[in-house]
Image 1 (cartoon, rainbow, N blue to C red):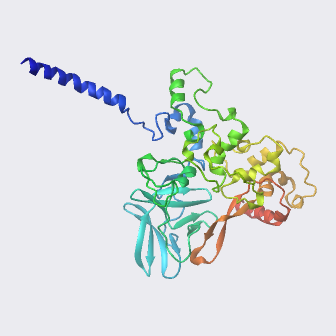
Image 2: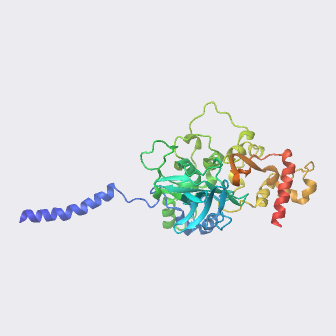
Image 3: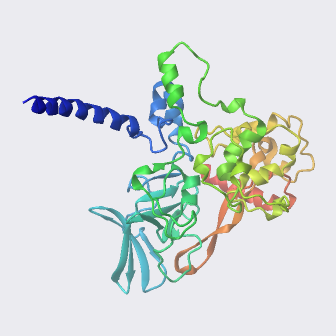
Amino acid sequence: MKNKRLYLMLFFFLIPLSVILTQCFNPAKSADPRGQNFAGSKACIKCHKEVYDDYINTPHNISSRQASIHNIHGSFLEGQNTFNFSDSLKVVMQKRASGVYQVAYKNGKEIQSQRFDIVFGGVKAETYLYWKNDGLFELPISYFENLNNWTNSPGYAGGIVNYTRPIVTRCFECHSSYISEKEGQPQRLSNSTKFDKSSIILGIDCERCHGPSAQHITFHVEHPKEKKATFITSFNSLTRTQKLDACAVCHSGNKDRYLTSTFSFKIGDTLAKFKEPEFFRQEPKPATIDVHGNQNGLLAASKCFLMSNMDCNTCHNTHSNKKTDLIIYAANCSNCHKSANHNQCKLKEQLGENLITNCIDCHMPATPSDVIMVESEGGKMIVPYLVRTHNIAIYPKETKKILAFINSRNKQRN
């Protein structure tokens, strides 16, 4: 009887003890896949609602998102939803019960279909991804703003439908805030990357640029009268190099090789620590830098940059969606160039007083990328993918093109 009572006491004692020990050695999983130090962007709304509401419409925030018929710019209307490779081969964008799909037809017969699952981009162009088991692949048809139509995805061969291009982690390092690979990946740029679907954080969120905020939020909730931002890095407290590095994580091109994922880069870090050293590297000349992706390199070569303390935030307010308002950017130029002499400028006669509001068109013209080329239907023409160069300079040879571009845009506005 005594032994039975002893066993019962041990039983009721050991069960609670085992639960407690389990919690100690296996703490509750963080709600944010990046870990306990992260709170998630929605936690910022309570104190920063106005900033948050403005930011959700910015290009950074929509750099990737879950696909739906409501946030894909291309049309699904009959007659506007088809890309023809040839008379016998086409891809049709179709709405079906389980979502929207890119459906390939050859001689009128369906040969393959995949669903739009994730959207990359949304300002100049969009490209689309689909899940296949735990892997992600690019869909063959993209959307191009300059055409206002569907296009063959950049870099794809004409005349064939290709659903097999894999998406690797590096793509997400610039288009999202986080995604983790499944264990056992052979290498970071492997063509067989398998992802943990539950880990994905789409878009560039608050903590991607401002760092983990859980401790910051806890402190300020407990000390509401404290107005000085605590336990978080203020962008204004950074050195110029640190500010540039924070943007260069995604805006310095893809030629550098990284030793580790840039998801681990936190604001204030030094980007060079993440790269493989290049002992004999020479700084590239502006003419050799493609306008797509390497805004940091182009800006660093600009006379405006070299003769001032400007950084990316001198012109860009990343919290606000004013990307296309060139007059606002021109006003930033006049802060330094108040007495700019345009007497020799060939555009002065045509533009008159409007000359001072067209700083960007003249000194940072929209330039075609050599990296991204977009093919129209049937391979009839290659459409330039235009990106505004960040090499701020005088472009005398571009004067006629610039004037035609300005006049064309003004007609569209009117």
